[in-house]
Image (cartoon, rainbow over all chains, first blue to last red; front, side, top):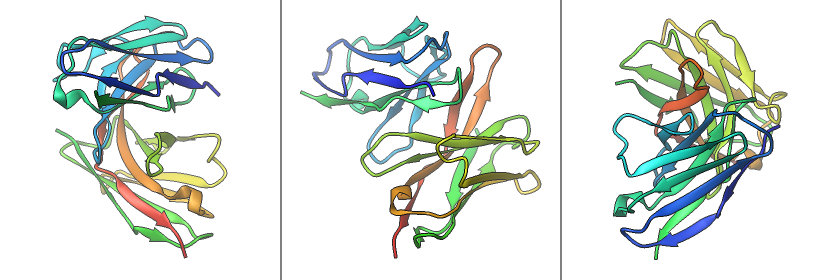
Length: 106
Length: 121
């Protein structure tokens, strides 16, 4: 099994801050890495697929990078609606999610 | 735009089978893979399995012995059966569409709203 580890598990930030979330795979997954946003009480929403491709309708303040085992999700200037939980997900071998990173308002 | 809706009992007794159906509207079930994902209250996401429109499934190894996912293309539905349910199976169950573009792997691009299933006597 490929394990996905996100850091930090939780993060406090302010509106306008630049935030980076990291996802590390237990083995190389090439570029088969996606990011999701989940607001409380809602289903997850696809943000970024294949490391750096923005899903249609996702604001450009979201970006992704990485390859192999180390990946990042960056939000360039936090907005109120960005305070949520973020998950990475690999599809290189089977399908697994990271444990999530909860982004809270400072 | 495709929409997915989970349906099924919200309460299941221990040792019984947890059964859910996902109805797909606004698009055909053909040509895609369809998946179940669950989320225990206050916890993270766990992939359960997926099936394609030809009926070929793949399952999370940790659940494989208890899970069956099936598809009914005539009704634009796919279903989940999880046998021998325990309290640990209490979760919000989501159905989702898998989008596969060449070289981009499997992505969950559309989700249902989720259905809470509690396993309790």
